[in-house]
Length: 145
Image 1 (tube, rainbow, N blue to C red):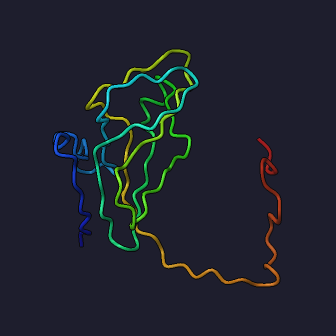
Image 2: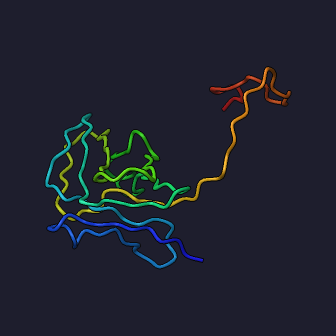
Image 3: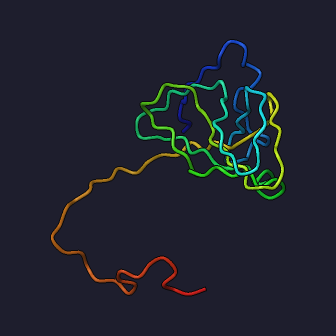
């Protein structure tokens, strides 16, 4: 059973619609609608021209592209970024350049990936005590290298 996710593009951005490179890919490629340069150490918001209408109970996760991360040290500092079902604004991608050179983004460049995910039905229940576990409160490197 497929899920209908509605989207629209800015009028001059129809050629930038999200698409999968291969039918069995998990993610849709997102493209830049802007021409810009990201200086070393800088973080920018890259517009995509994309607007989504996700069904209730779903989110869009925005993730780094592995090739950009490996070859150019471009990362999404909030990855995965979340687009909530109720958001109707333009999808933007926050990109940080951790490399030593400026990186040029051209209109139409694939800048990120978008995965549509179903959210589980969750009920948070406040309690006075939590059950014991083998790990306990250990975190932030407590299991070693």
